[in-house]
Amino acid sequence: MENPNNRIMAAGRLEGELKLSHEVMNEPFYTGTLAVKRLSGTIDRLPITIPGKLMGLLPEDREQLLLVNGQVRSYNKVIDGAGRLMVTLFAQSIAETREGDTLNRVTLTGALCKPPVYRSTPFGREICDMMLAVNRAFGKSDYIPCIAWGRNAQYAARFDVGERVRLTGRLQSREYQKQLENGEYMVRCAYEVSSFTLEAAPGEGVAVPHAEGEMQEGYARSPYHVRDRIVN
Image (cartoon, rainbow, N blue to C red):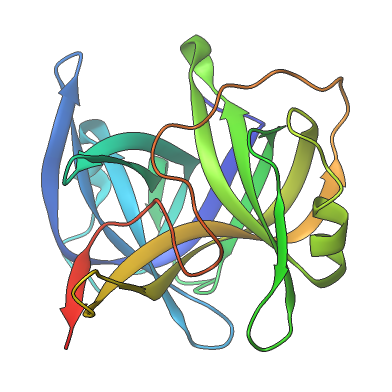
């Protein structure tokens, strides 16, 4: 079902094997990694969820570039006794393509469900963290972490919780290190939408529930990750 408030179109290649994740109404869903290249050459390795009905569209050649249309979705998962907000590209259509190998375009309209956090990076760049609640069918919502840079960060910092925001950007991956109590560092991978354009969306502000899971605390800590590893 198409949702005008939540759309993503990305071109990439599948990495590794797809694994059975769960079933809903007797339909299986599979998860894996989609490698999407940026103009700079950096690779974003994005979690992807593929319904069983689309599996027959996947080519045997894993080097084949795929065009994926769908939504950015989230769900809560308990890891080590703590709730984590997991983000995934939910595929609604898949086709082979030979063009647009850097395509990664997200359009979101939703309400802020946490106060925006404005700050500067160690390199002096302005950045603002946002958590956007985006409605979908059957009364559900996806809680999607987003960031804005520069003047967009200044603008985003002025929004209040419940205000509606429309943005375009890309879904990206980012590794960061978290220091453990024993002094070791753990590498985690976070996923967020880096916005290119940002504006107030039509409509009145709404009351939104808080996203479940551990919320981020500055740019060095994140609630959404799919793997951890220890750095010696």
